[in-house]
Length: 287
Image: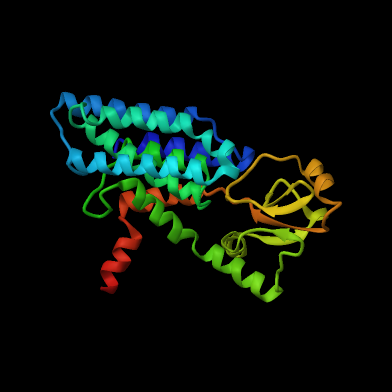
């Protein structure tokens, strides 16, 4: 229980900052990871150990597969190469943590295992635009403090993510039915079918005159063409400048509401810690 108090303080602070500024400084997650390592020092001094996620050879295979997939993404997604290559420092940090988990004593090896596997999970979640990078950092930080229990999945942070999705599942459905009823269209906007389907669940078109800092555009202008963003999450943008840039091409633009996903993550953490994995319990109840 003592671990929960500082984590909740940091999460509540981060939620307030996310609502106000739409941005959370990295020191919040660094402090949370530092707290996790301090608890690791205490557990080590008391000879407290935790169950490892898997054998080393299995973890090596997972990491090797991830690196292969990452390199393949860099090669195949040539149009987004500059954007994807920016993730390289995080990849190198991930590899450093991954190396440590093979040599560190318990409980540090368990901490590093959880952080490494959570990183891989977050990488693909953010790559497909299902979550922002800042929210992913929160889950990685949580993975340094909390491990799987009988009430959750083996990786606690993934149970937090599960719960977060369940708690916000009604919002995308409401947005989808709103777009269906309004017969929302992508007039003059280029985008892959998957991106358009995703936009139907996560955004809606509004007049550019109604743009504000409470909504975030899903459309950007490139070479005189309007295109859908390939990822979700909040972005920094000047409303007036964006309106001026986009107005020659359209009077309506697709936006996504500005509700920070960190709020559902915080609620997901609370439910995961005190109750367990909601999805796991639902499936257990049904089957």
